[in-house]
Image (cartoon, rainbow, N blue to C red; front, side):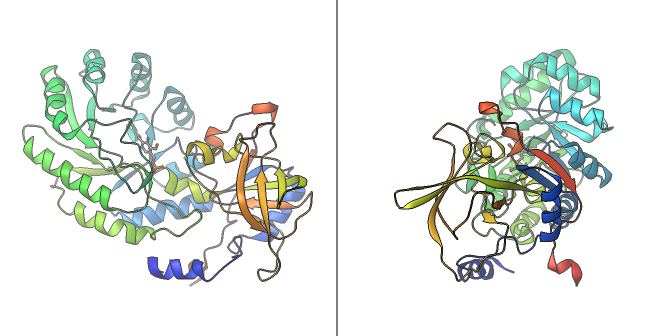
Length: 399
Ligand SMILES: Cc1ncc(COP(=O)(O)O)c(C=O)c1O
């Protein structure tokens, strides 16, 4: 389906059955075995998304950004598929190390690190580090013979939901100075990287960043460039449609045709691989009529796995598990989390059929930046993760 067809498809459905592609019987079985709230992680979906992105970006080495969902089962599955890993902290190093990942299969992409973290990553065998400022370059002087540096450049984008180039990345004009600083201190500079922002709604920021990076590499011909790292950003659909990944990557593929031979291209996808792989199953634990709206209180909220609403600006599609008549009556409703804080509101303005205490709701696209940022405020435990295979069906698989 192209973008126009997708928009049309959603526009025609006033109250779409958001769960149509889920195996409802498996969900009902899981509900008998596990107390809500819980997250269901479908490893087939991780595999599906990994292949979809790899097919859309042939020849690009994918380093999964484990910060988006650092679940051991996800890492194991991606390792089996030949995936590599983007690490940012000593904790992430320990996690992948414990799962048998080799240091050479990783890049360390946090532009700001403690000396202790650099040593820890080096001991693990990870030698490729991202830097974006002079103070960070100088931190590598003691390890100059053991590291290869990738310099991160900032390219701001209006099309990304989460702007990552505000906080990190040097300006293009600062790049030659950083390269000189590193090389004059005996270090090896081998790559450029950027991240145009997460959940990017158009590929053109990435295309521009690729073109500008290639031009900069050409100008600095004295550097033996080995890598161009095009970051993450690949979008998934939350409330509205996004470009299918193959269409999204088409102009990126085209821009990458200009990459000189001998330069390997990396990407650091997080969200695209992890977001669709997990759903959350929640239960209504309270119901109150307040003014014109019915408030439903759920057993998880923005202090739990729905924390991505606060930190990641995501609006997860939430829908009742039990089938409902899409042409029946819908009422103005509010979905709220269980904690005592009034900020713990999931949706102030949602139309729902009449529901009861005890009814189950399902939140979709809950894999990326959700449980990763959940807290235990009010002593509510974080929802547990139940790992399954094949909960999500793709009609095209059958053809
Ligand atoms: C350095 C770096 N790489 C990769 C990612 C993953 O980005 P995305 O989830 O948009 O693919 C992030 C996200 O914060 C990041 O900071």
